[in-house]
Image 1 (cartoon, rainbow, N blue to C red):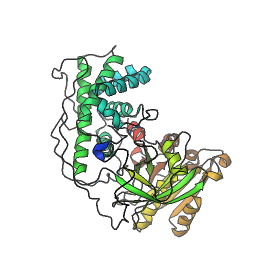
Image 2 (cartoon, rainbow, N blue to C red):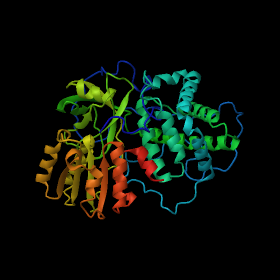
Image 3 (cartoon, rainbow, N blue to C red):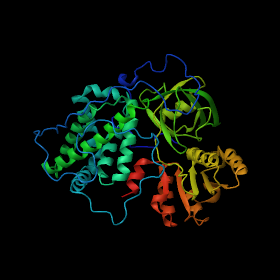
Image 4 (cartoon, rainbow, N blue to C red):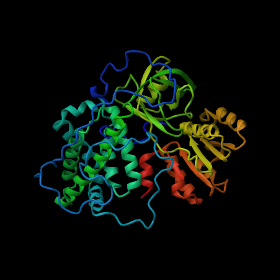
Length: 478
């Protein structure tokens, strides 16, 4: 998939690593080369000590009086509840995404209304809020600077955007809790610790109180403190549970590098430990050329018996990681992988057909889904629409056609914009009906947005539409 797909991923809500997680300038020279993976069992590393409970947030410029106003009624974890890890659960997210709220959903909670009022106030000055937030964070807590890339150009608004988006959707419990748990697990690779969260919360409140001054009061501040405390505790608890059963990151050696076009490469790597994941998921990748810069890529195949992982990478303009992977990476190079994430996976308890829309390198997880259906021996219909701007962009069409030839239940259609004079979602309307299908979309954000709209227009309910953009998934449910 294209680099920077998931804008809600940020450090301390994501994005970097420091010495506490084995990072630092020398991580690219592991003590020994990765060994071939010999089985699908869980990765094993010594479990670190359980994280410390975070201190309470101290809002900037306010006395530390107990919060007032109504208690939150949506997400279940109480502020700074016990950080004891919950019972171990599968690392793999649930097969079905959380359903979108129904039109008859309850009215927003009092805290949610206050949170959204503040966000509406700061929307016109979002850039200033972001700059002030980071200034507060790095001046008051200079030790946190090492969690972030040396250059903040591409990272600048990710952390704040993630926090604000999560806060805005505080009432969308089913979607938000699953998202925050995945995010908390993913933070481990950046060296994020429980004690970092109060510092971030303090600076968040400081930035909001300054730029939402026209509506800010004690009641609103209390609502934000409760909201942030709940969000951070979900993430802390998920990370603590994950520490007991999985590494924070994996080394992976590049074993093959195939340039399909001048700007698209298929990169195959061997992780140093077994790497459990599901077809349709994605991971984060860090290269030795851009330390602490992580980008997301979907797995381009279902889990393989040899343990190898493949990614389709397109070099995008000014894309640091994507250009490094396409133009600099060679066999023998060592990269790092974060944990798997994403819920765009096949529900094997259902016999519904699969309607798959893949645009550009978004065909990678679609290919993985097809392989997954084949490996389960199912004969459910799978309809793949492979979108591209030109013939040149259909870099993996031969692979998809070979799969079609091998599986009579699979149909592959190439939709080329310049020839068909229509966008991929529009082409899907010409076929069907699709009321008995689960829909999967993977590609650029614009394609996903228009694809979701098109699929809803032709009668596919929202809870049967899955895609790989988490921020849009949360937004689509409201």
